[in-house]
Length: 359
Image (tube, rainbow, N blue to C red; front, side, top):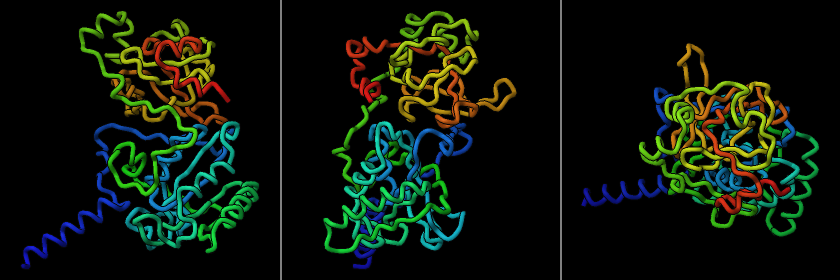
């Protein structure tokens, strides 16, 4: 009888872990060389807002898929101190929060807030889904005072639909602490993870780029497909000559894909003239289609950029890019890219990405 009771208790604990926002994956080890780089949008042309909607895994996954959202990460906001971590937030009073950067020319704050109120229970106090505690309260935390009028107006509209008072707190952002690496893009890395948000119906959803759709060819196929220089760049990490490559001054509209696998990587609308002599982009088409790794091969601390599906060497990323676009410069070898002209994207199977060229 005692043994059966023990097994029942262990089963209940296991179920609770699976159905809550508790971390079930450990962070990547530092010696793997993977690198995370956070853009700086504080002085950019984009707008910022912070949203607390219970477990941040699902809230981030929901908004990250909406066209017009430029960048997001998850962290802890509006607690009593400027330091905390996942296991301390209940004591420090922080709320699980997503940091959202959006393009106001594509997506307005009012629409974001309507989406937000649509995925939470706004009258619930310190609870969303299966998660209970002060860290799971809902909140809208602003950095620009001018946003407060929009926030109040939308909240009043939502209140008119409820008999109970809205419990979502509206405050100026304080003490935002970036969450641990294993919480970032959690549901992308763990598709079967717990989520209290319905992800089956995303408004204005971005095209999904699945690595499985772009398998890496065999070594023999790669050698046959690529020129000598393209092979040395993509497979051996070589660098082509500046100002003597096909795309450094290409101003045509279209899509840049991995020359090895065809996976979409960069959009022409994010390309700029850096003066470096290589194609330069402010960001990839999707943050997850590239991986970043520390590179000290020439006795310099650099960050290498590789493609996700093909593990193709693309180039490096630097923090001297345009501040109005987040401050990053992806310096990419032309030899690692294939360019698909805008008018040829549909015929080449990339028609879904035409939405990025339509305001």
